[in-house]
Amino acid sequence: MTSKFDKASFREKLESSGEFPMLYMFKFIVLKGKETEVSALFPKNEISLKPSSGGKYISTTICAMMDSADQILNLYEQASEIEGVISL
Image 1 (cartoon, rainbow, N blue to C red):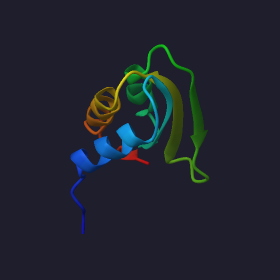
Image 2: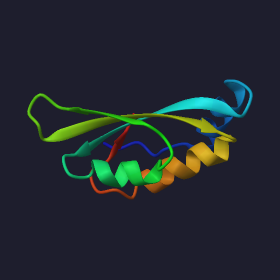
Image 3: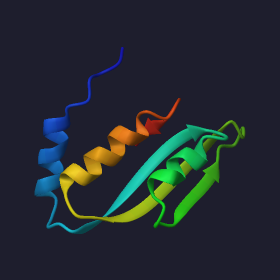
Image 4: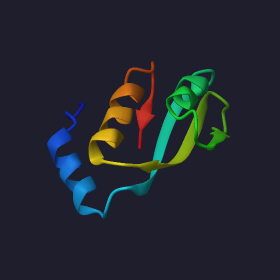
């Protein structure tokens, strides 16, 4: 069963977590070969990549300075269009 993402609730949590701009950590798991699509969303940020033990997936971690909750939500929406991406 998949649960629907509650965008309004997430925005509220982001806005109450501190003052913007803030350093925000994004974490995604993607199929091997798709990590470049995640990297393209963060062209000015350093990205940490870690392959899964089986080598089928790549864990990506990106720390980026974000100006607003909407900017964070927009990046998650763009990432959700990548085939097989899992946002953490």
